[in-house]
Image 1 (cartoon, rainbow, N blue to C red):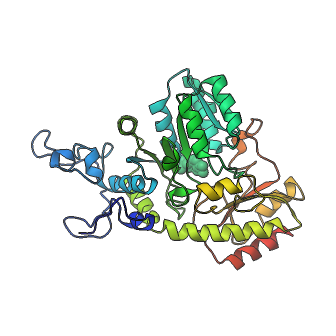
Image 2 (tube, protein in one colour):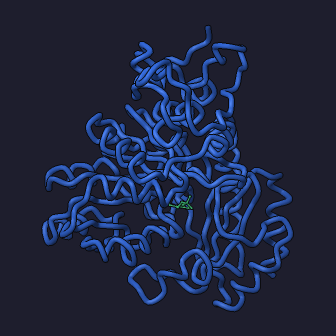
Length: 400
Ligand SMILES: *Cc1c(COP(=O)(O)O)cnc(C)c1O
């Protein structure tokens, strides 16, 4: 019987980890267990899980199936696959990236704690800290996470519980040194969390570089087809995993079975999609860098990007998100976003189709007036996997 082994390569794990053929029928894809509850064989006689003797697969984390908020086989398959792809012990799948972040923060932080976040963090992450968790006693400090010295001094000044890092960051694509930040975090008694949404585990595996937890918006590259909202947390430490699983069930923010199934289906092609996203992203960045209507390009694959060498060391490729400042200012940037034919004007990223957006008025509008405010003439592209010549033609036509 085909079974994924932790020593299998990434592409193999993406297709097989947590996804053994169904025991009853041999179905090669995990069924959608669209169910809320499970029959018990006598009171407390739950099926599956450790009570049923499971020592491997997702069943090893649960006593058995009693209620789908607590455990569901389709979600379990996704969680097992994500843990394998990130090289973690256990993953937990959530209804959204934000739900995953919230669960992780609440599992780790207590009122009075300080958290360091990237000064160009994802707008929703900043809003969660600034508008929601501030009311529960958490204080967040935006720092430039690509500058370890700045992080070290912020750490010394505030004594943070968590260092929260995105790399590459959104939307400015700066690169943080995960290994150095893990050292800084651990020497100050903090945990290092990496939001790995932009890279995906195919391009970067933060746990292996010293991070304590990885969070994902699986809505983006993992799902990959712009048809599902989801999130995940992956950790190595089994105590932290148990606290997360407790909270996931207690709060009720778990991913549903159909969403889990869609995400798992997307993950099967993650490696081939990412290879194409990277190739197309680089071509777009190179074209923009020499275009007269473009003032500045942000893409870690370009040799003059400040984080290029670090990214080349820490990542397998540079991803499919490219940002740039329009040479003719804000109105030209906004107008261009409405002029593309193939790049659809919309928020989000990481799908097979190309998207264009204006961060200052769209994804990052909530950061206006804060230290996280982004340049008003900035345009962000999520470069899809369409034909590269068609994409370049579309951008050139919209630029002039
Ligand atoms: C989209 C995104 C999130 C939030 O995820 P949702 O699935 O939209 O809740 C978090 N971090 C990053 C980097 C993102 O791009």
